[in-house]
Length: 283
Image (cartoon, rainbow, N blue to C red; front, side, top):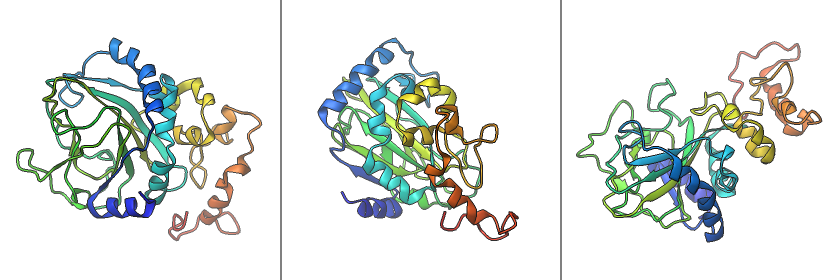
């Protein structure tokens, strides 16, 4: 699906589905890396995590193949249309629904952003189907158009939701303001999904990615390093000891290669006074 069509669907209804985005070999490799953590991990601690679900956090520290999902070019092309440069990876976790899991409560993923609705989403979320998402195994339920709501909240019993059914290897991409929930698993098998989520570069991440991933960040691409937090948001948010944070991983890193300096110039006049106009325009 072309990026412009996907972006249009998110603007109109709040979500889009990219089928067949990952090949079977990548899915199998990822599942093999993840399975030991699912086997050893506990069930959820509350209704939201799911008493019959297992979650694995800090995935870039545990399952290197998840990088193929986090920086999938089709997904990032969509996120690029909604979020400002140097946006961040706010969370990345596996959710394995076991038989008997109940429905989650409706929520929207950028709910931690304390700004009134309706508003532009401060995040873009994805849920990758590692297993087929079906009507009876807990496919994600979304309320089309709810990303445009103001203070309305959905009635859990009468909301006009849609089940996002999709084959393994597909991904649903949706606005951080879209009301949704994990479905109930009435089947006799598990339903595994992976949810990398992205947020504006000025927002606090749900997972403290630099601590969660630690020194393993060196193993990933510069794009992922940037999304973890090794990046600068103009004018200079995110520096470490007065230097670009990528210097913490590579002392020879050239900050000029990021283009952040040029983007920062829109914030300052010729005498380095902060501009009074909306300096984020066009950044």
